[in-house]
Length: 187
Image 1: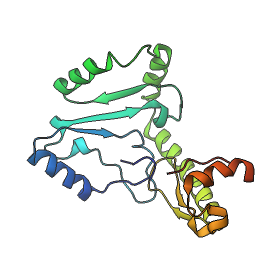
Image 2: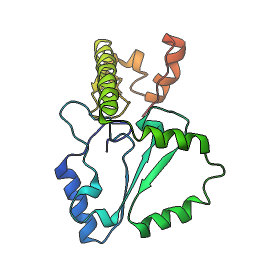
Image 3: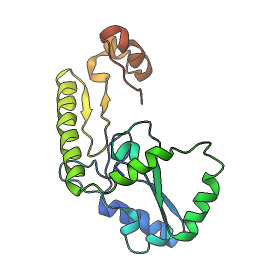
Image 4: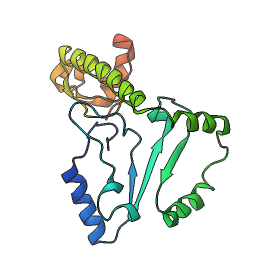
């Protein structure tokens, strides 16, 4: 949470329901919180590990590529209790061929930035989100305004069958570059 690509930000109640199930069934939970600083409007990012009984059973993953908009840098981090972190390291050593050493030093420095950096990034992206969402709505799309992340999800069906390819998202997206010079990802 926030979810990619829907932009859904889970509420405290939704996270508590997940925590209840995890505790009752003695489960571990892996959370992807790469968009933790990109929550908009009145929504709040609540780390699942911060809920009672969840710290010892949660593996939290984050990424510099998302946190700092450094696409391609491929530097991430995991937070977890020592035993779970050891398990992650054991698996990770067989998944990575090369490390991004120079980028790691840059990200270590970036992680010392003040909270104002994250607030500024969030505010800037909220303006861009609103501009794009409003433009898509004006163009006739049904827009699902995200509570977090970089992405916006739309419904193409209101555009009509001749434009929306009868609601076929893949056909619609394949035709966009020729039709108007844009690209989109079908869902």
